[in-house]
Image (cartoon, rainbow, N blue to C red):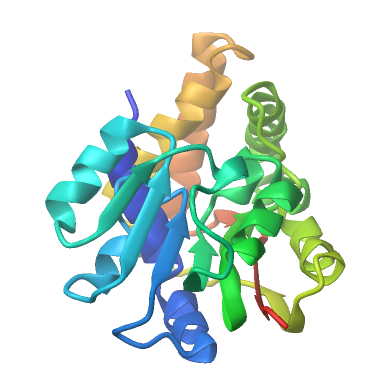
Length: 245
């Protein structure tokens, strides 16, 4: 069983430094009106705690209930990101985080632009690209192959990361910057609890494609490689920021 709030918090830990850079580059100030599209349980939105004009939107009401407890001052909306319930140019900044892969990314980006004022930033803070995934030892590459199929069957686009630069350009944003998060590997990382959480997701993704004993063997090999310091796992995670003309 996946604890999605813990998963969102884990993803937020991965991107903490990048988000700080993007927030600074965007010029977000305490009194600005800021919307996170696909805010989930508030793992990222909570960083704006205590500030006015903070909005979060998600289609999952149960996640928004968690967000409300973490960030009672936020205005939360349960709605479809393809049809944002805001008037045009009503937000100063609009961002998402590990989200565009789960929707029609290009269309949702257009909606994010529509509701953002001229001069405001639109940010895709993190979008993975499983097509560029690297696994070592190579015997673990099956994990990525199965996950790609699982994500597709769930309605996601596992190759979203490589596309967001083109989406931002095509949508007419200006002063666009895009890039890929760096990665580091050390013998004492990640923490065992991080591996446990990752495998709760992997098991869920693989259960319809592998026999239980195959999943168990992959997990055992993965944990052993981390323990030995030989594991390399890299999923290119792209970001993009652009400004509304």
